[in-house]
Image (cartoon, rainbow, N blue to C red; front, side, top):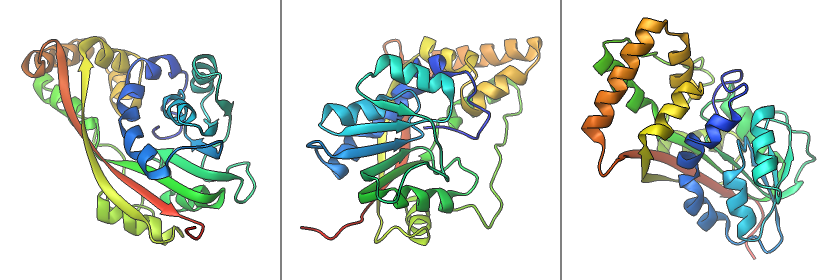
Amino acid sequence: MRGRPGSWSGVGAAYAASYAQLCRGTFPALRDLLGEGDGRTLLDVGAGTGELGAGFAAVGWTVTAREPEPSMRDVAARRHPELRVKGGELPALPDEDGAYDAAVANFVLNHVADPRAAAAELRRVARGSVAATIWTESPSWLWAEVCDRAGLVAASGGRLPAEKDFERSVVGFAAMLGESGWPDPRVHELRWVWRASKDVLWTSIEGGIAGAGAYFRALDVHDRGRFRAGFEEVVAARSVDGLLPLEHAAAVGTARLDPPL
């Protein structure tokens, strides 16, 4: 559930209090695709603070959560003792081929340096099913609107080299997964509304979460004030009953690795 390496150092608590709630919005779709666990094993790669893994554990999966950021692991281990929380990240997982019945990466493949290598590695460690998500409409649009109201130039966000990148759409994601060795990948778009409080959103910014948080931390005191003023304007314009109903969209992909029974 994460961004580029280095942008998430030490932010586990802030992430758990903010964007972890948003990213867990894919869980119902992923649960429907992978089914009940019945004791089967699942690897959650880029597990963040463990919310998705905990959801799978609650429906019978034995979950190993791999997360490279120590502060994320600390929160996951404390909040979700039912998970086996370990280090490790794509595209070089310390697991044997086919070690798990299923593997999942929630909002990871759209941020790694080599998406195809990462997707191939996810497929390598699974023997039954594999699933992954990417943003097709990410949270960045909200913070671009804040910057616009504040009169600031929003960060453009880095793009991968052309030979590594892929189209961030259902069609583009399916093509990339197929090129990575996923057999007959099935991809659909999921849309949902995250009703976020003002405090939760500001926690993500002050906590340095993702690109928007890093952008805010790089501003001087004057421009931070402008950013906060723009944020307050967006909150006032968009709030409904004290919450901001923010629509997001993701491409959800899966593949079956073993022959159907």
